[in-house]
Image 1 (cartoon, rainbow, N blue to C red):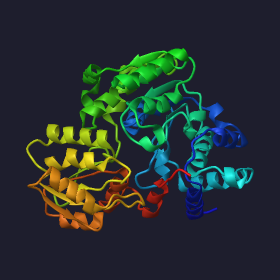
Image 2 (cartoon, rainbow, N blue to C red):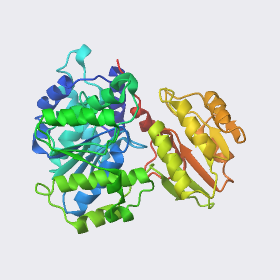
Image 3 (cartoon, rainbow, N blue to C red):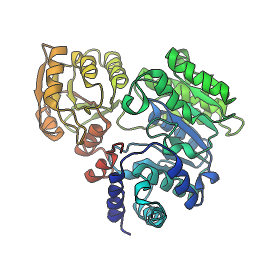
Length: 424
């Protein structure tokens, strides 16, 4: 099978949508030889900061000399970003090999129970990471936790970064119900680490951990100020909090996965995690800030970072948001900080219409110059002479920006649409 044929096959799995439940994934993993039983995991759930926390942990443990697997989603540009070993993307020929190996296993499912894209990719990742003999896998949930396909593993530690509003249609309308879904990754006797500070969400996590006899570590905001995090190259106070959660996890696992202070320092100093408050300078001298602020909490973190690091300037804001997000609140949060606002569609079936965003932004910032563009490419051209541009609102938009700005080592626009999903 060629790589392009493998990608087309993965595209075909989108027809089956997204389904909540572990039955299919357990069965598919069993047919694949239960590769998860040959690996050790740190399982990471939460509303925001999952990917950054995963990246921080991966960097620290790699600096400690371990062979570290990394499984995250969504990808920004290339599908292969989802599955990495020591930060090397899974090779294209290996993607093709893994897809080809999965196809006969899928024939053992009735059509109405056919595994979804994410279920297949989850087991693909397990097979590949097991063949790579990883010492540790940093394993990010997709959506939720309790019924997420990633929840078939038995981890060394479970992390819940934080609990905020997002995906309420699927996870529940209250922070307590969302916390209940995320807390579904907690396993009996397995340490739990969380930076959650919302009382009603924290109570759910506390109760679940107590019921399962899982030692619980609460990470406070004060721990985000520890000196070890001073050299963290990711901008934003929220990233220091993600770092504090990662360091608490390292301490909790010290007897199982040893790691010293030098390893931690090296891992933090070399850290890279694209698209999260990533500041780049174009050949023209223009500065561009890329941030996948895809929900209200993310928008609030971006707003705080703009006030902290760029207080002397009002950026041009290029904004594109998915319509199933609380886009009105996001506009209210970000629009007042910009001198000029350009609204664009996200390359997604779920995009919010720029016109509606424009009206919301104009209400939130009556003095701003608010315009609409038909595409991100057009918006970048229209703002080419500006000194400072911030692009935000969706990780899908950030992936497109990375392609257009030549910030990605690969150019595969057709693979970004693999991120699309819907519940059937």
